[in-house]
Length: 254
Length: 254
Image (tube, rainbow over all chains, first blue to last red; front, side):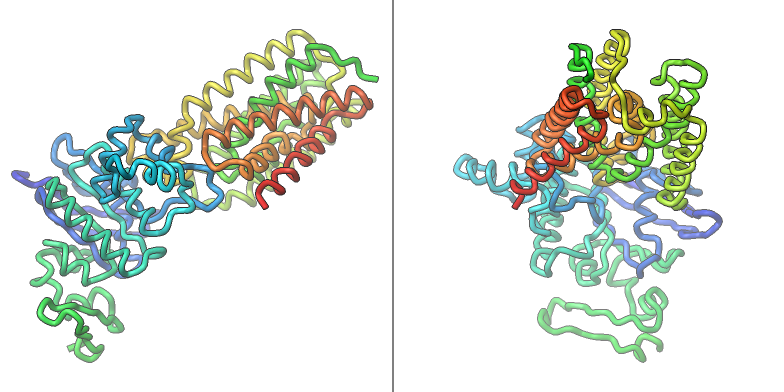
């Protein structure tokens, strides 16, 4: 466990005799960004829930002693009619206005004296259901950071955020990792995100298909066995930023 | 004409506030229909109490208690089809209740009767209303978080099962108190309508729960006073009063 914030051995989860995760092994060091990838139904969210202690499991999940975990769920049941303001949402967790302001500024929301009016009227007193997808995501991240966690579990949103907004969220996570040495475990559907931000990756398809550094483990063969023959994936290479390299199906089945 | 006295007024004030307050949480949890159907479970208990000359409140609470335990157990086993099972159980208890309720009491059991109200009834109503308000206030933050995301709540250390049990117990208490005034068939309206009307008036949680309590108070007190004047059963008048307020709230919303 030296230097490791999380160590998982032989993790298996079954619901009613249906195995949803089998024999998962990986570890995470402090300051790592671990991406969890896999097709729909591959057990990514279940693994998160197991890591949070929300589902019964077999095997070992060893968190570093006294580790504080923040969690950003994939979705919250917030409809337009929910009469809950952003401030009230924060107050579910902390009554300290100072902490609230601090965590808002750590996710890049202007909180200086000249923005006070704007912050009060256009953010804190707004109903949660009226926030845009990107704002909403930012607020939940700020919420999860309020008690200064060591690890952030981030279940990627699949809807409601446009590409630009998504980019900003990941830049933000990257920044948090740099500034606060935050360890991040994230579920992502976007391989670009994985290449760009993660320093390790685990591929799930009920079983563990790969684990390691993205550039060494994410070869076409692994991805093919992960997503099946019909998988396509896009990969921005750094040299040719605007050029998508698309692997054809045939290529992947080599 | 029904002789209205201060006992009626005091009971209506307290039970009205507590019903509106609790109802606001029932609507947040999206259990409008379950709440309505649950009130029917009171009928067999009420009938047995009348048959054996026990205080009707105790009889109603006894069967409601069984009802909420069943809901609580179903909620913890999410794979069961909650709605259909609840629908079956509750119409079943309504059927049994109607069969065993003594003929001369059937109307009051279904639609409420406050002709005979004792000082003891009033004291019990006041104390239990305060208990409901205090317990809900105590668990309100974690309750709201749970309605948004049970996983997020659990991972923040909320004991969701225990909170749920407390909440359902409060529902049973309020229903058992309220059926005296509005009857088993119409009790659902006393908790549901103030909350959905309040939702239209409110953009924050603090305003929503307070407005719902005020509407609960206005509906029950208004209905009881009208019933006194016109010698109608109070239940239907309470429902009419709250529906009128709901219609007003639609104007505000539009």
